[in-house]
Figure (cartoon, rainbow, N blue to C red):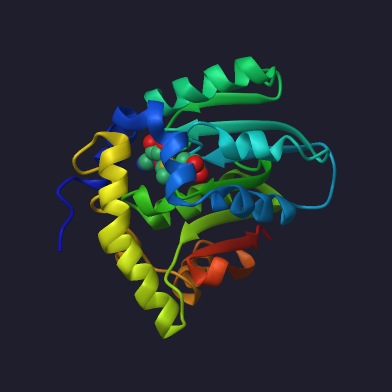
Length: 235
Ligand SMILES: C[S@@+](CC[C@H](N)C(=O)[O-])C[C@H]1O[C@@H](n2cnc3c(N)ncnc32)[C@H](O)[C@@H]1O
């Protein structure tokens, strides 16, 4: 089944729901998104004074989580949606984090940064939305310093048959309904299940990371396998 919108336009959907995104995220994930982000932060490289790139940064929640870590000096967040970035900027101002987090509009498939700049790059629930996953992974690899780490959070499907059936019921029946009511948007959450079910996960995604050049690429399942954390290092 094809999506009713091109993935290259997905940021426009986020533009239209930006003001409600954080609330919807919390409700639909039952607050678990905070735990998933924390797990990603724990897998950052160990050294101090890191500069981290957060792709598909949205309303900057990952960037805000990252700067809680004393190892992180600065985070640069990039997203295609001006609406999401706008909400993020308001949050940073209120939290006094403008000096540590910088948000920019940009495409994760064509980054404007020169090579070998960042100690780590993160992408949370964003890579499923970009049309060219391989280009995005190659860009992440390019802008990392040698020895830098790429970390990606993305939805997956549980391997246990029972959990998988329960999760698919949630994704196909409950999530679109709740998403539609909360967002006021007809399709924003209707096709989320489809993008999750069609996206490569587990070892299939790890293989894409290896193809982009990542060494020691691996993953860990979180919350019964409904989300995977992937990471890999630049040689
Ligand atoms: C599900 S949100 C994730 C936001 C945030 N990372 C989080 O975990 O809450 C997906 C984000 O990807 C952004 N996005 C979609 N395509 C993109 C692209 N090609 N480059 C950068 N961001 C993109 C959207 O605008 C949206 O803000």
